[in-house]
Length: 180
Image (cartoon, rainbow, N blue to C red; front, side):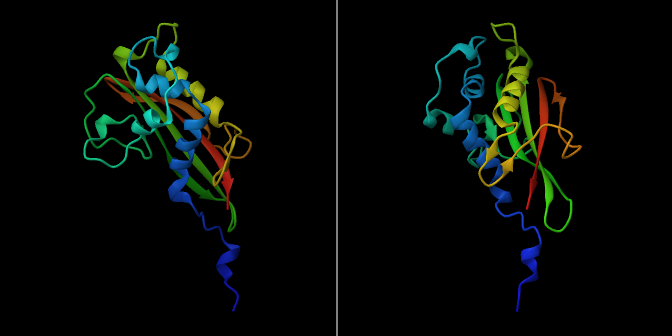
């Protein structure tokens, strides 16, 4: 008997998409990691982090999520009272185009406390990290996810918008990809 399910998208590895993006970010962008670790206005100009330092910023399921800066889901279970910056990378939606292909949309969020948002180079953390997300992920083929895109040719989802709640301001970016 032939298994009819092979003709249908299974969205395998969906539960690892966030991790794969963060792993890619570790190897392909130093600026974001510096802006996450260092709360000073010259964070952009500090030394690059080691892999161990970057890994220590990624939430690992421990009791106090406020000790971390990088998350693989949306939402905030604990109250953040520190003046810090956090990012969230997560699957946002899947819209099935047909039985074999769907449009996956990933969300890339950045939130920064108002007091530390402005940098000494007259830019902001939020805008710099948003720009770095686009530079790092737009048009890049990430193994197991495919090529993310930030355009409206393949989906109406991709966009960048303001978000956040006082005392944290932020932005989110939606990037899509066709998956099977």
